[in-house]
Image 1 (cartoon, rainbow, N blue to C red):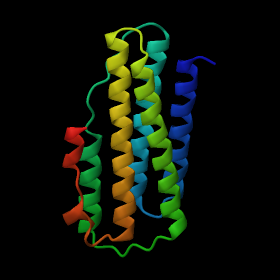
Image 2 (image 1 turned 90 degrees about the horizontal axis):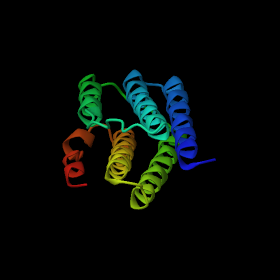
Image 3 (image 1 turned 90 degrees about the vertical axis):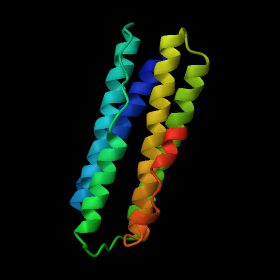
Image 4 (image 1 turned 30 degrees about the vertical axis):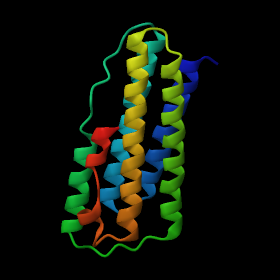
Length: 161
């Protein structure tokens, strides 16, 4: 299995994991966020497929973070009582681990990439995997303390990454 096949399989697995989590989510807002993450994995898959076919795909900056933040703001505004068990949070932590491994994988691939375009694409995908990790961290914090989360959430630090 070459690097692209391996990475494409990982992205497909990530999409399935997020879609399964979304289907089991007790909250529509969280299910929406998980669906957004699944869609991002599909985008990565398609990018990798184009790279494997020898084309130079575009990997544009996403609006995922701002879209997710808007969902959180809407959820908080609904003032619902959230009652999640620890196993739900553990599933998000597992997803975080997968995102961290993906980020590291793409950064390693960038180090040995053939040509600057391929290197740039791997770095950009790695950065997006890092964003996914941050989104999951915010989901965990939101579930742990929904009434204080929004005031303390830090989305801006990704600009430095």
